[in-house]
Image 1 (cartoon, rainbow, N blue to C red):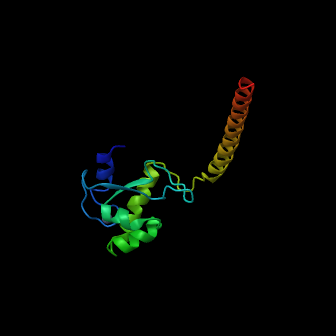
Image 2 (tube, rainbow, N blue to C red; image 1 turned 45 degrees about the vertical axis):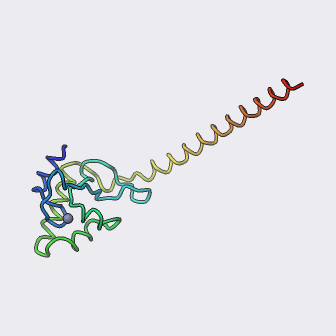
Length: 136
Ligand SMILES: [Zn+2]
């Protein structure tokens, strides 16, 4: 999906507050924040078009809460269902649990780091040995 299609899906409006946006003013928000705690993905269905202001204001707030602050009271439910159908159409699964992958990734990275450190240590030891024998 391209930026234009993303804009079109939401009628060229910020998905939270309804303000008109175009390619130039388009900002992209992650419904589920991309960080170590929330593990949202930079993937269609999690990326939604919004205005710069909403992007700055939303931060880590759940979008369902944020939209109630931003959208007109009569429009909240319509906005929510538009976002929900977008997530569905893009087949993004908000319940997808990446934590088990993330946890094992951190373990693997730790093991790799230890191996590299040990390797460097051995190389340093050998370099020192060589240096000492050449000084004899
Ligand atoms: Zn907005």
